[in-house]
Image (cartoon, rainbow, N blue to C red; front, side):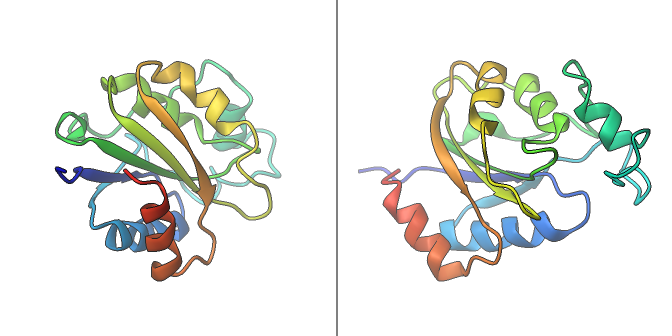
Length: 160
């Protein structure tokens, strides 16, 4: 059986998800791609207590699609995309929808991985599915504090 080409595409505003995504990439023997916003987030942008902060405004606007810094994600050459992001307001940041809507994920397997300060994945997959309707969605999990060996076991359990 041919081995699958795996990409870990991640968005990290503060660095926490970047560390987790790097660990996942090593565990899955995958390539790594950073989803970068055209306008980087500042600490003030990420202040969830401020009703006028950038992240609050984006998350409260269902049509929000922050621009990407580049359109160079090599999605087409991969079979499986592990999509990593922090949980914001109980779901994925809106830039994840921008990413999914910017590429053709037809026939690709998408597995969600998230970091969170307190909530789980909730309805994140259901919210993201319409952005890549022709992908095969495989659920996902939180990776807070996960070890490389536990991630490797999880990846193997997916039987990709």
